[in-house]
Image (tube, rainbow, N blue to C red; front, side, top):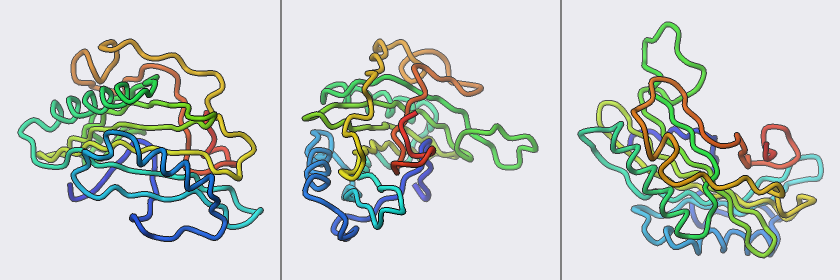
Length: 217
C-alpha cells in the first residue's frame, strides 16, 4: 500500500533503532514476548518494533509496540479481501492464545464527500479486531486490521502493545472483557457495512500511559 491507515494510531521505530536510556530490562522482555508470537514469523516485511521508554518523570511512558504486516498487495475485491484478511488475523490471534473481545467495521470515507463520517479511513474499507493476552501478569494488547484501499490494494497488519515498566500496574485488563463468539461479529459475518458497526466493549490500550488518550478505556 502507498499509505497505512489504522483505526488506532501507531508510532513505531524501525527494528534496531534506539529508544531511550529510560528503557529497562523488563521493557525489553515485554518486547521479546511480542516478537515471539507465532504469526510474527509470517510477516511479509521486517516487523517494526519499539521498546517502551520514559524520557522524564514529567512525560507519560511510551508503551512498547510491534507491528507485523501479514498481507500487502493488489486485490480485485478490496472490501471483501480486507474483511477476509481481518478474519484471518483474528484466527491467528485466537490460535496464539489471545482473547478477541471486540471488532470495528467501517466503510470508506470517500474523497469529496461534503459530509464525511467522523470515523474511518479515507478511500479505504477498515475491518479490525481487538484482543488481549496475559503473560506472567503483564497484559498485552493487539489489533488485527484489514484495510481495503480503493481502487484495489489490501493490507493486513497485527499491531501489539505492552505497558511500560514505569507504569504503576502491569495488568491493564483486570476486568477481562469476554471473548466474542467466533463467527458472530461484523468481521466474520453479515453484509459489508454501510456505516460503523461494532461488537464488544470499546476498550483500547493506547500508545502512552498516564494520559486519557493512552489509557485502556
